[in-house]
Every structure is written in structure tokens, then in C-alpha cells.
Image 1 (cartoon, rainbow, N blue to C red):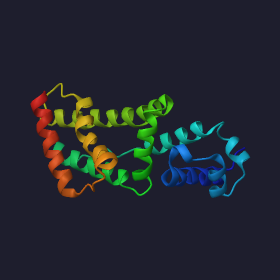
Image 2 (image 1 turned 135 degrees about the vertical axis):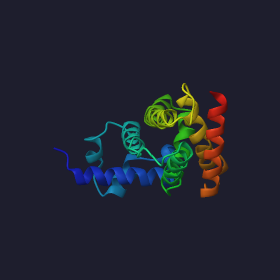
Image 3 (image 1 turned 30 degrees about the vertical axis):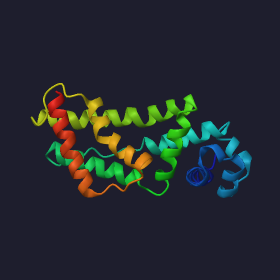
Image 4 (image 1 turned 60 degrees about the horizontal axis):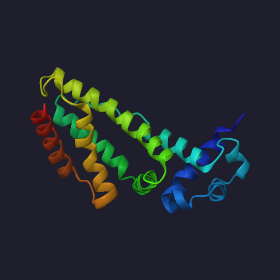
Length: 187
């Protein structure tokens, strides 16, 4: 039986190593050293670096984000984007996400894992959010939840990975209004 405390130490070490050196330079040896375990402890859990990193990153990415219900779509959207933006700006996530996005361009397994871990979860959340807004009469029937995900989260990832600009409350409020207007116009 695998010890949970060792698994937690390894998971934390992987996230910190990814943030510091990136996927390309991450090594099992460095993770083991940081976690204070032998390499065999890692190989008992994962067969290789890719499997280890993808499982750990997927677990973190798939953590439940609470579905906002502020009473308005714009309010729900702004709150959701605030939660996501805070997570994306975390000192570790802000280093790992751009690195893994770059790696995904070269490695189809990483691309597939990120797609599954991020897009599917975010799509489900957007469908619920859009569904609430349609029920309240704020958005028309048939509003595209996929477009909603692109419009609400695309700018956040852009600012994190490309522009490297902070995401403030004023920006989130403006973005929520712009997304709401765009979804109404597109339907």
C-alpha cells in the first residue's frame, strides 16, 4: 500500500519543480530530492515523467470550481472569472500553465491531457452558467456555451500566458459586460 504522505510530498515537489524549471528540465531525480524520497517511491506510483506530470496537473486542473449564482449572468460571470483569474495568477500556476501550453505544441499527449483536464471541465461549467442565464431570461435560448468559454476564459489565458499582465477587478467587470453583450449579439 502506498503511503499518502509520500504521495502528497511528491505531488507538491512536482508542482514546485514544474514552476521552477519547466517540463523540459524536470527530472525524476530532482522531484525525488525535493520530496525527500527515493526514485523508487515515484516509480511505484508512475511509470515515467510524462505520466506523473499529467496525472498531477490533471488532478489540480479538474478541482471543482463552485458555480456562481449571484442573481445575474454578468455577476455570475464576473465572479467565475475572478475565481479563475486568481487561480491562474497563483505563483505556481502562473509559471506552469504557459510552460505546459508551449510543451503541448510539441507533445500530443500533453495537448490531449490539457484539453481533457481544462476544456471539458470549463465547458461543463459554462453550460450550467449559460443555462442559468437562459432560465432567468438574460440570454436567448440556444446561446453557445462553447463560445461563452472562449470569450470568458480566452482573455484570461491570453493575459497570463502572452501579455503577462495582471488581471484586476476593473478588467474583470469590463470583460463580463463585453462577454454578456457578445453572447446576446451572437445568439
